[in-house]
Structures are given as C-alpha cells and as structure tokens.
Length: 577
Image 1 (spheres, rainbow, N blue to C red):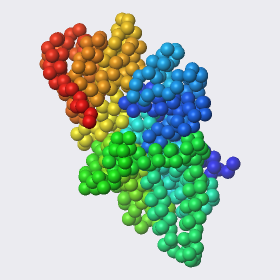
Image 2: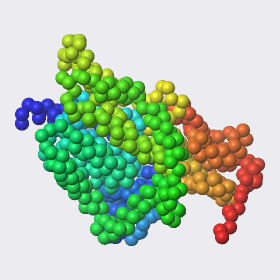
Image 3: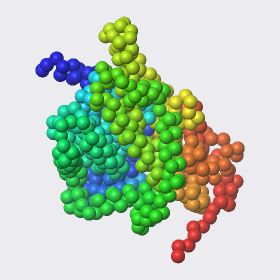
Image 4: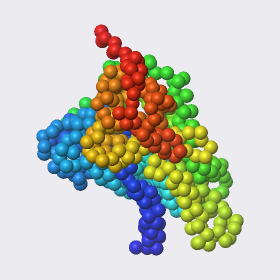
C-alpha cells in the first residue's frame, strides 16, 4: 500500500475516533414521541419477513424500509424468537406491543438501544464513505473538517442518535450526491456512479422526500452539456442520458431491498407516493383526504413555511457553521486558482442547491413542519461550512508560516471541532434542543425529552411496579423506562374535550404526569394545566436546560373541584351523518 493510501486510512481512523463517541455515549436516552411507532413498525416488518407476508412490509408514505430493516436487525440481536409466538401485527398507536414484550421477559428500551447502535454504525460508515468521496473533490483537510462539523453539529447529532429516518436519509443523500459529483467531475470510474445510484435507492427506501435528488442531478447533467471541450453537443447529450440510465439502474436497490416490491409493487408505490403527494398538497394522508386534489394547494402560504424553516435552521445552527458558510460564499467568488480546483466551486454550489431544495419542498408542503424534516439541509450546509473553514486555514498558512507547522495546523482543526462539540454539550443528551446564543427559543422542544427522567423518578418509589401513571405523550417516552403501568393521556381526548374519559382515567391512576413544555405547540393542554396550577402543587417539577418541562402530581392530592372544572369543559362528540 502506497503512502497516500496509508494517509487516507489513517485520516479515516482519526475521523472515526473524533465523531463516534458523541453518537454512542448514553445512546438509550431519550425516547422521542416518534420512536415507538418505528420500533413497532420494525417489529411488524420482522414478523412479516419471517412469515413471508411481504405485502405487509409497507408503512405509509415514508416508506421507512431502511428504518424497519434496522429494527429487524435489532430484533435478531435481542429477541429473535419474536417471530414464533403467533401474535401477529401490533397497532403502532397502542401499547400492546410493549405489554407483549414484558410478558415474555423483554423490555422495549433494550430493543431501542440495540437498534440505535446498529443505525449509528451505518451512519458512521456513511460518514466515512462521504469523507473518502469528498477528499477526491477538495483538499483532504477541507474534507476532514466538513464531515467532522456535519457529524458533530448539535441538531444533526441529536436527531441522528434517534431511531428515525432523518439521520440515515441525510447521509444517504450526501453520499449519493458526492458519488455523482466525483464521477462527473473527477474520476469516470463506474463504481462512483453505482455508489451514487445505490445510495439514492436507499434514500428513497428511507423517505420519499429524497426525490429532490433527481432534479439536482438533472441540473448537474444539464450544466455539463455546456462544459467547454472538444466533444459535440450530441455526444454530450448521449453521455448524459447513459449516465442517468446507469445511475437509475443502480437505484434499483429500492426493489431488491424491499420485499413488498417483489409481490405488490403497485400497492407499494401508490401507498408511498400517493400518500406523499396527498400530504404535501392537502396536509393529510389519502385515507383522510380520500383523493388527491392538487387544486387545494396554496402556494402563497407555502412561502411562509420556507421562511419558518430558514429561521429554524438559523436558530439551531452553531456560530461555527455560520462563519464557515460565509467563508464558503467567499470561495464561490474567489479567483484563487492555486488552492481552488474546479470541483470545489461546483461542489459548494450544488450543496447549496441541495440544502435549499429540502427547505423549499417542506416549506411549501402543507403537512407538518417539524425542523428535523430538513436535516439533509443541515448536513449540506455544514459540509459547505467545513470546506469554507478549511480554505481559510489554507490561506492563513500561506500568510503566516508558523501555521504551516504540523502541530499548529492540527491544533486549529482540533479547536474548530472542539467548539462544534462544545456548543452542543450543555444540551446532552437532548442535543436536538440546541439553540444558538442569539436564538430566543430552540427549534425543537417537547419531542419527548425529559419524560424518561419522570419515569426514573417514579421508578425509585417503593413498589414502583404497582404504580399506575397517567402520562401525557407517555407511550415509549415514559413507559419504556417505567416498571409500573403507564396509561397514556391521549392528546386527541384533550383536543376533542373528552373530559369524561380523562377524569375517569385520572381518578383510576396514582400519578399524573403533564408536559407543559408543549404549551406553545399544543395549546389545548392549557385546558388541564390551567385547572391544576394554583390549586394543587405538583409533587415534582423537572427542568431541562432551565425550562420547566414536566409536572408530576399525586392523584390523591388533586381536589374534587379540579374534576368538576374539567367535566364542565366536556363536549359530546358530534354525531356522524
């Protein structure tokens, strides 16, 4: 092995050592409100695979196949016998799955932990592959900083540690882009094109929103037609078509890795893309809207969504990223041909387009507007920032000779990475609640963080296994950590003013656990919080990052007047025609 290859492998090893600990340490906390769905869906997927019921491997429009494969691997490592009990499929909205595991001596949190570790290994592998591809396009120091800053960005770190799609999606998309960029602008070896296509297929298996990669690649191929060389326009068009066909053929891993496509491709594709477009245009799935009606789409309202996503990104990005993007913008207009080879500028420009496409798509869509939906934008912009910082370091070394010394260059890189880590550390393990010093409020709050602390508090009580807790947003977020019985205070009951059900379930419980941090995003919770506060003192209040997150009440302390006040708010459901 030549010296250059040894250097690359050593750099990859150093990068892994730097980024892995933050992704692994304390990896079983917290469980967020979405994760129980994916644990149950993944377990259903495992059950379907082992019973050759491939038509039951579809979950809505995501299609979340990579996530369910991850949980399948987690199940094989933790509870492979799950397939043999004949229990069938569990509803993702009900706690029956967790009850089944406990009846068989297993805990859902252990399955979550194993699945997260497997997902983390995949994300880290994709990060290292991304570094290898990027260092073919830009200076190795730029590539190192770019991947390190992206992987240690607090918002990305927080979400990529969770069992959801966004972290994997962002990395599949990044590697797919870099593979195509290397193939078109650096090295025409087919392997890079196949990597790009395969990663796009995996991105589509993860979440249908990765479809924005197609117009990006169309743009890249179109721009290539105007490149000045000796080839004719016809030859360039033919080459672009062949490139796209080969890339799309590699994307057929979508078919290979999804057994549902083997037996019912029409059902799978209509379920994924029909629901995706229904959600984008009408804000709900097809089982709610019944049919796709693009005429109901309001583009003007979508621009507000774009600005909302931009501000969410600003609030949850570090100053390191901000300054790095300024330096990256400087590169785009710089005439420094010595340090800026041709692929660097195009790589930066296309990364900016990639990040912008995700913001634009989710901004104009009429579904939910969670900031983590644009996690691919965070990764793209952080890679740009790393390249920007790397370039400024190279310029500084040319101006000040002492910075060219090995120890000085390494120290500068270490300081930047340490600052990126340091911004997020005060928020650990809830990294996704990070907000920069100038932001009034974090982009993500009330995602389930903190409820494990409430569970641990009640678990320390005598005979905790006999305690019944009534918990808002408690499925998985609380119940996975609590040995007693968890009764979920359903948001839909609060929203629909079903206070007969709420007071009945409350009176049969020992403790009430409320989640006031969601007051802003779930204003209906004020209907309960407002009747308790000032009337009865909570036994325990839990704070996270200085914010009041959780109130724990002993039900025996709640006076009858609270029940009466709640029942006065009750509304009977309207009769269906």
